[in-house]
Image 1: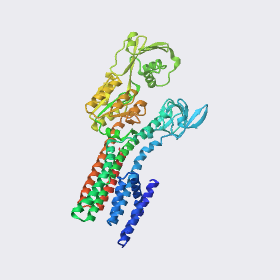
Image 2 (image 1 turned 45 degrees about the vertical axis):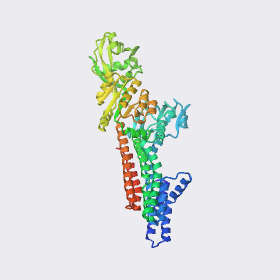
Image 3 (image 1 turned 120 degrees about the vertical axis):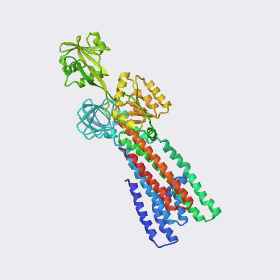
Length: 610
């Protein structure tokens, strides 16, 4: 609880005690008015001053103006206890609102803690502590255990565990060693790390996240904007209605005091604060709850749109797959799998091609370079290498035909690397981009949420793309697409009336991320262009975060609609009863402050999503 909230709580307690004491005093007339004026002023002086100051600034019709004229009017007609009680309960509602906003803001503000204060950079062998913005691309920084990583980079020396929870929502630390990439905002838990920076601070992961969070507050959803506009014309209409209620009926039936009291009840219950507070608070809570799960939503508009999505389109590589090759199968002929893999790894040991790297990663142990002789790259077909004095050919089917090796096609889909010793065929290795562990589960979860169709838009060959789609249970696959053709596919679905989300990670996805109703980018490995173009960023690159984001969005919108219907419904009923003389000031207090508190408590549910 903040200092201001504590002061408000003290005033509430003091006013409640004074109000109870005033009710027990056996006084009447001016003394009774004075007794109740004390708790009224203790709890309401700031509301009165704010209303007066706003009138001086030309801002007349707001909730403080309504509370001021309603309670002062109650004093005017000698309803002293009601006047003091209305102001007391109003301030209780304001305290609830302040605490609720603070809690939801805290979940987003916690992201601001990821901003590094300094960086230790190694220059001419000497460590210097500087501002992260002063570190140049390619410099070496030193991160000790317990320190926050200030910039993205590659580990040059050391190993340890890194806590990425603030960025990805993942509680399990990640082990890193030489050659691994670390991202800014993470915390080095164990071991001294020396890291070569591969971005400047302005382009680092932490800077991009902070920019997204700061920008999200500036965007309002259509529902939220409607409530803001609604309050602008609603308040003067209510004041005019109250004046008519107080002045017109007595001209015909008399009894001015009773009709003025009805008008005051009308004013108290008509305060729109339950709507004006609870709707933005619901969106803020939804965005904050998502941020705690590693899902950055750029604004309330995007949250509202995501809740209505009925079609989800995916890129393949890096989105549903890991974006890196791995050996899937080794099929030897007359030698062991280990021998075949050893020959291929030796031949590919000097290559930087992703396929070669996947073979080297699958190979157990280091390659003895003394075994190698001449190595020749055969453009478009593979490698000729001398290993242990024998000539081997490692490459595609075309290379096997050139050396007249008796090879056979593989029944598995993927990149097939054939190996031959001179013209003797030794077997082949199948390499594939690996599916993400949670991709199939994400597709199932989306279907359970009622998503109408899942579509994979891929630039890959038809056989490979369709195989991946079949493995994951995706409804439809459109392969061999250029970026412009992906946009055409998305536009066709939009023209058919779909509410569409597109999920991607590459530079080529930026145009279609922008065109979709909701663009969703992979944040950890995704390109800067994709992240900038997207409306939502999944910080840990897990497809399973997508159905979670949809659930958060739908829950938030459900709570927003509940608060709108509940607040307007209760207010309309009590307004009608008050106009007919069937509701007193205590009904009005519940219609205003009670509804506000219940709406705020309901809005807080947006922050918690399992």
